[in-house]
Amino acid sequence: MGNRPVKKGWITAKTADINDLYERSVQCPESEVDLIFQAWGELRDRKPESIREDFCGTSAVAREWVLRNDTNKILGIDLNEEVLAWAQNKIDSELTEEQRSRITLVKQDVMAVDSPSVDCILAMNFSYYGFKKRDILKKYFTSVHGDLVEDGMFLLDAYGGSDSFLEMAEERDMDGFTYVWDQNHVNPITGDIVNYIHFEFPNGSKITKAFTYEWRFWTLPEIQDVLLESGFSKVVVYWEGTNGEGEGDGVWKIDRRGEACAGWVAYIAAMK
Ligand SMILES: C[S@@+](CC[C@H](N)C(=O)[O-])C[C@H]1O[C@@H](n2cnc3c(N)ncnc32)[C@H](O)[C@@H]1O
Image (cartoon, rainbow, N blue to C red; front, side, top):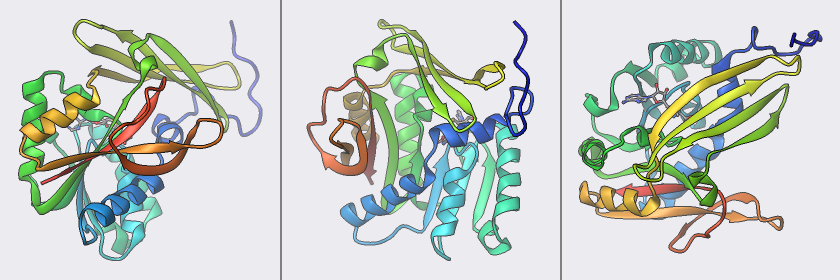
């Protein structure tokens, strides 16, 4: 079937920039940076300045971090040269020279990273689910622990809920395109999962498998156990509150109970 005619201003599979669509669909750097300050306010009596973002991708958080004040510094680590080039271009075009000077992007495996000690390390959007074996996950968490200052903090996210064990796809209408989260493969025996992000456009064109994630589905209790075994002294979970319709309200609180709902995202704060 041919694509429908393209109207002025429409994005199509040919004209789309998948990193831009990714940022618009799945990232909210403002609330992530708010959460960093909230956690430090609640768990440590100072503000963090130097952070390292593992799996930094498009640098959305890095850009937001240096915009917040004149002293924040960030080191972004990612393996993918293409996404780092995209990120650098975005940094160069959107930030002042002074702001740019406080961001360093490095192409490296987070498992073998050579970084100075920092106040806080981030691992967001479940990227560490790529470490499929417990001993490898522990090796990563241990190296993060070693790269933090004495009162440092590791912040990471996790997802779960009954839907996350199902092979299913979910569509979300965005401004000018449709975002599709496709939980394509779930192996209940090994915990292996394969998730895709697809994009669809108003003229009928599509980008299938714009992003592929071959992960191990780690549960919150497992992640907390491995963090403690990796040397962290205390681990807490931030759980999101709900509004009248039962949807997330963007208010995060340290919680020990959570809610057994169909889908949730949580943040974990691990203290050195
Ligand atoms: C799910 S994206 C996350 C991007 C961003 N952190 C976010 O919150 O949306 C995963 C990123 O991790 C990178 N990545 C995967 N394994 C890595 C590794 N071992 N070391 C460094 N980067 C890695 C990929 O290149 C990709 O850009």
